[in-house]
Image (tube, rainbow, N blue to C red; front, side, top):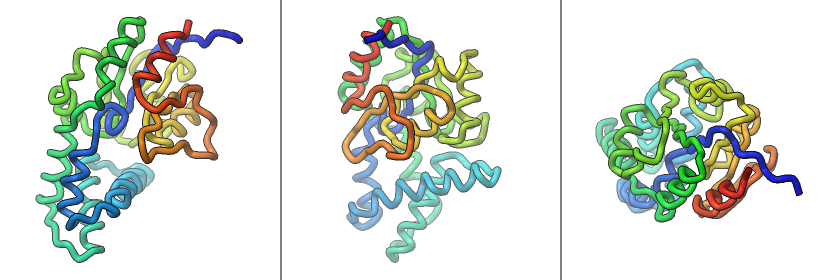
Length: 229
């Protein structure tokens, strides 16, 4: 079997891939009257309207879109929530997420193996600065990228192309590591390689190309990548 060639740059999604949303989801659930079943609806509504804005040539910070989506879900269930309340909940929640337990060990292994590590997130630049500082992740990464300069959310192909250009590498030399089927699908369609972190509740999109790595946590992904040549 031919050995796998190391990607030149590893790009990491941040929310859910590196950072654990469990505590934030509890806070959102409480704001929605304890209706846990509304959490997936809120998250998919947030993603839907981020894509609507990008497709329409418009941009708002991801946290603002998340807050607007939360207001929409709340209103459909007769729960009153102001824009200020929704933004405080979503933005503060996103900025104070802890890393998943295995993340720092996995990132350390990849750095020791000589990989270039770059984060690539739909969150705003200011937001991801707070996230990495609060989660203690800054020292592991060579670059930290927000989609804010390009003003198109993942999974738009333009956004992956822009990220590759920022590192002065070709698309085929990039690998996205993410816990979202839509994100790895977008990267693969943009000509990148991809590794899927199959965290609970996450699935690959059956109509997308297959990722070359599919593992249940980031440490297992790292172990496989360390074996590349």
